Image (cartoon, rainbow, N blue to C red; front, side, top):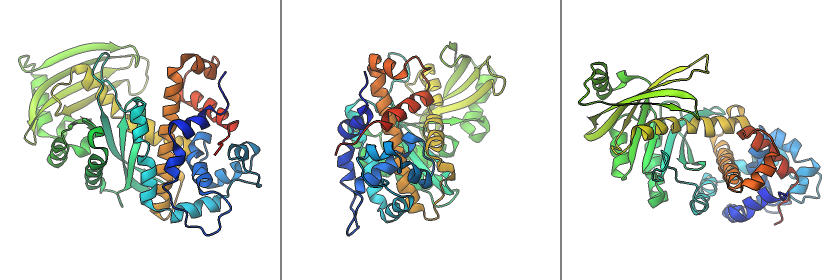
Length: 388
């Protein structure tokens, strides 16, 4: 049977979360609540689906939560205590906490993924902007067996995503070194010479997914070739995706952008079971000339992982769309803790799936959906205890 403390043990031993908390300086003079208990309470909020500090306050008074921290007081912490700590916490410390998991995930082999069956595993990165809690930010995520949003920074105001993203890429390259992605997935905002040159100088390739061919001349030229059936310059393939249950066709050709040779592809998909948005089209441009049609299509789908598996998921679990802080500093410290929890939960689920017998026991006949797995893991955490 699964041990009740398995997820707590995973956080403590496998991810060595206590070591990461030790990098945070406690400025309080005579604290009655250990700082790591406060920080860990914030970290596990997405595990329990707590969407506000007030919800954390209420949860912190329950027997199961006090058992989790071996707390004998009437509550582990209050919402005001959590807010105060987030206010004086230095942004650099929350950044170091979020960054600190990269070595562990690399050791566990979670930061690489093949784009097609039997393909060579490669390092993939996704960068995109979003708005949460009244703040506009840019997030850089590593995609492998899990999605690890390892960097998030405030862009100040709407319209500053691109310069913020370029600074983040420079920072990520210096920090990650050989772990920096060899393929970066972006949307049309990054379809410019500056970004292409920035990425290529780092020894990486860039892939852009665009909804319209009118955005750049190189796309319109490719559209002309596709429409006029210039077969000597166009490669076409069709197929059926049994996992996503759709038929697809792709045509690709070569071109040049910002002084670099590129592949340009037009992907069309039809989903017969859908009543809305059943017909989908997109344009793909990449500097990686080695990508096959299957890899191009898969990479285009993966571009949405940062939207669906990071932004939407953390909004669902922690209510970040409505989690308002007037001061951006505590908000981003909290968001970094939430992102760390999101990746840790994904890593834990990934480790369970590798142990098929234990995973089957956890599911106990339930349908294998992410929400169901999350609910069962949260229930398991209710009966755990952090034995520090």
